[in-house]
Image 1 (tube, rainbow, N blue to C red):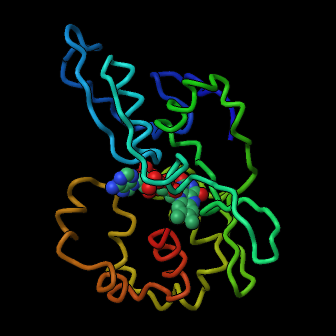
Image 2 (cartoon, rainbow, N blue to C red):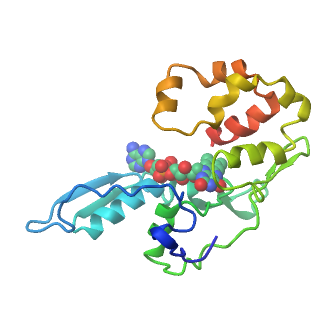
Amino acid sequence: MSGTPTARPGGARRGRDRRARVLPARPGTRRVDGLRPTTAVVGGGIAGLAAATALAERGVAVTLYERQPYLGGRVGGWPTRLRDGSAVTMSRGFHAFFRQYYNLRGLLRRTDPGLERLTALPDYPLLHGSGLRDSFRHVPRTPPWSALGFVALSPSFRLRDLRAMNPVAALPLLDVRVPEVYERLDGTSAHDFLDAVRFPRSARHLAFEVFSRS
Ligand SMILES: Cc1cc2nc3c(=O)[nH]c(=O)nc-3n(C[C@H](O)[C@H](O)[C@H](O)COP(=O)(O)OP(=O)(O)OC[C@H]3O[C@@H](n4cnc5c(N)ncnc54)[C@H](O)[C@@H]3O)c2cc1C
């Protein structure tokens, strides 16, 4: 996905939740002065690369340790051979980066200011073995409309499944107040919660298992 973020009134940026509040970091030195400290970062996935970049930019001498012969971790790709000897590239999955990943976009901009290496996609479709197709294209961006819109548009939520749900028990699914919602639900397993609301089985796979496995 490409494009530079557009400044909006009030300092909001495209892709960032309009209600997001910026909490300034505690004051500290922007760069390390004096004797240059050294540090090790273990793991060259996105997290390790981001940490190493931020530390190096502040003057720390960073050694990055990665046990694989390639960087990127779960976003990495590497050449390999099929049984018939043909050369292919192996990657671990479909990598679409949503526009609201502003930290990742900020990291990529260090070497690609216009984010030209990203390619805009019209949709992030999920194709089920049964032939059903879920799409995020027309889903509203703001909670709780995003969740309601997804349910309304998704073929994984059939009308009869929705009718069978317990609407009162399901209300916390629309509750985005933090930390209240954590305090209320932290002692309940997702399995028990979804059973209590009679969350449709087919949609349970889509909403929770696909992404938790990856
Ligand atoms: C199939 C699949 C599809 C995905 N699709 C998407 C997608 O479309 N969009 C999206 O946003 N996210 C997607 N994800 C999730 C995303 O890839 C991960 O959240 C992200 O890459 C995790 O980055 P990370 O740096 O935290 O961890 P990793 O990428 O796991 O990095 C950890 C690194 O640490 C190294 N390491 C571990 N232990 C040691 C050690 N002892 N010494 C040295 N090195 C070590 C590992 O080799 C690895 O390189 C997908 C994940 C999978 C598996």
